[in-house]
Image (cartoon, rainbow, N blue to C red; front, side, top):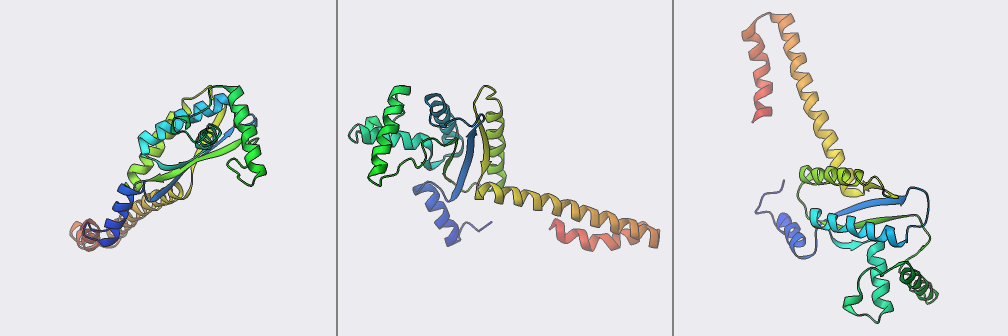
Length: 212
């Protein structure tokens, strides 16, 4: 960890406070039956999950199918701030998707593939450290696993998730590697010296630097 007086740490903290976070975060999802993602029911479920993620992680600068549809509706209704929300029903959703096709004909591609069956909720979160971020990831996985009737399947992925899991893997293996080394040293000392004092003399110089 960087010391609190470090200019680099202060820069990271400033970005976290003022620009929505320094760590990229991503949730991948897809329809279980391969059907189209952009349906009224799927979008409302995704908004519920997105709100949970915002409240749990403090996710900012969000990019997702939900945000895309909200932006299309806002554009469709003349840019009104109050129009930045999901459509009222399946009929209005179809109107918005047709409107998106018109925008695409003018090289304004908000939704690249409206018939796709997969997507992502992505954004940036503050730097809390790998331990707390991994804990939040596990809580999210449990939350999503309880949605038995959902037509969507989810997977936390992305750079931050892979780095955190790599740190966890390395830390656990390093811990057990050190324990094995001490145990092996103790066994060898017993076989060679058969003396408690010699075992302590052999192990203490190796244990103390680790503890300190």
